[in-house]
Image (cartoon, rainbow, N blue to C red; front, side, top):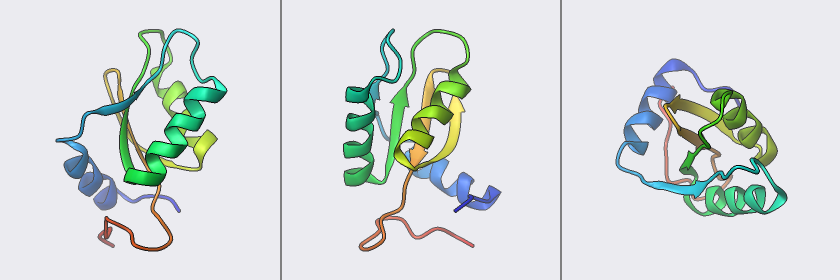
Length: 96
């Protein structure tokens, strides 16, 4: 499911008050980090991930999203916003 501009804007607004729940270290995307992202996104649906200081942060964020089957909403500086909607009992009702 690809997000349109209106949905991205809605999710960015919802994520504004959130704190990062997963921090990527120098090792990047290890299996443990992927498990933690998957667990967090399963519970919260919308999470922030703090990326490491290296180059290619957007690519890191996209790899993290692809690894857990989530959508990359936005990357601002070292913070990435990821979203994966639950099939049932979704917390977020996306605009059309």
